[in-house]
Structures are given as structure tokens and as C-alpha cells.
Image 1 (cartoon, rainbow, N blue to C red):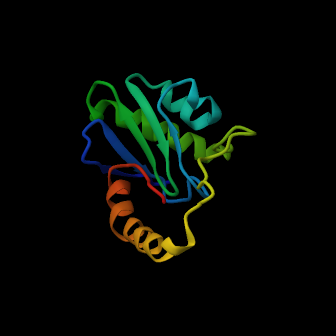
Image 2: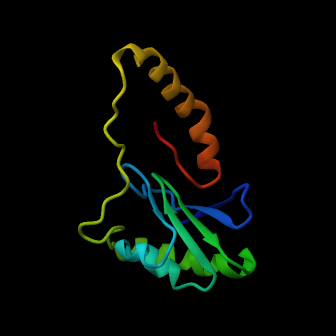
Length: 138
């Protein structure tokens, strides 16, 4: 298994791309160890010293560090991700759900404006946010 890494504009956050789907839909932000209890992989990542946050996207895992150098932290993160995927374990604990898109509600007369906003989000905003290790939806 080959896991690519990608720097983000935030020097404390790095993207890890395992080359396979991470979440089928939605995103999952785990800014604390307590929230990470919903994912065995996130728990394993929080066991690594200086890991401050984990974010799952459709095809990437973003890890935020508190301190230290990536050169020292990155091998442990890569090992944890590889072990998780090689074990065949589920990404989420039973009952855990990624953030789903909420039901949309807007006035029907605003449908054209909403369509334009969604297009801008998908083509311009979302790629920029994903480049920083996050995600955004309408």
C-alpha cells in the first residue's frame, strides 16, 4: 500500500491520501480524542504524540499536529494508516455517522441563485478548501 502525503497551506496540517476511498459520503471532523472514539483509525492516530486533530474526507485523511516536526511524526501516522487499512477494520465504529448534508430549504424563487452558489462551491471553493485538508458543501 502506498500512501501519498500533501502539504497544506496550514503548516500544522498534512493530508494523507491512501489511494482508496476514506468516506463514501460526507466528512468527519474529530478535533479531540473524545470525538475520535467513533473511529478506530482516529483513535490510533490520537495515540501518536502531538496529534491534535483528525479529519476524514472522501479520499483523504488530514492530521493536525500541536508541536514537533513532520519528519518525526509522519512515519508513525503512515504506519497507523497502513496498519488500519491492511487489517480490514471498519473506518467507523458501529453507529458512527459522517456529517451528512442537511436538508436544504430555500424559497423556490431563489433556485437560480442557489444553483449558481452550488456551482461556485463545487468548482472554486471546494477544491481550495480540500487543498487545505477540509471540505465544504452548500
